[in-house]
Length: 143
Image 1: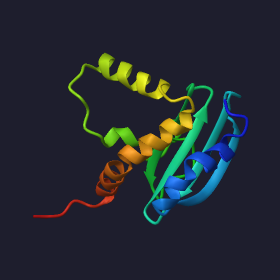
Image 2 (image 1 turned 90 degrees about the horizontal axis):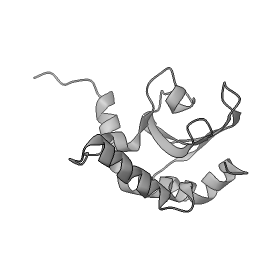
Image 3 (image 1 turned 180 degrees about the vertical axis):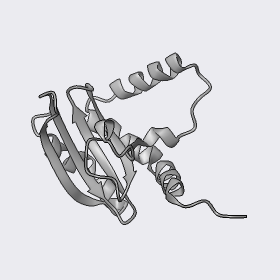
């Protein structure tokens, strides 16, 4: 776990979020309900939110996207169910699940700093995830 995760997020990831119109919304730095370290940094834009988190329980650093009305709560434990991984909206390869998981783990571990992986994930998948998430929020159009 990072000694100062929020500062690291602001240094590594915030610049690419700022380019996309995001501003810092909130920092929750402490422990989860089981006493394990959890740090979540929330950013807000005109039409959605992003959270960057480091979770000792999950053993990972990652990011999630949600509509503006999503509460600022850790996405994996959120009762609103509005927080989604950016990669949820990306076309999946034809590999079996085990192969996809292995590839994902290898990609994640290829970065010395997990926040550099988060930055790369945002750069690669934000536009697709953003568009899909906004489309999920629109009411269906009648024919």
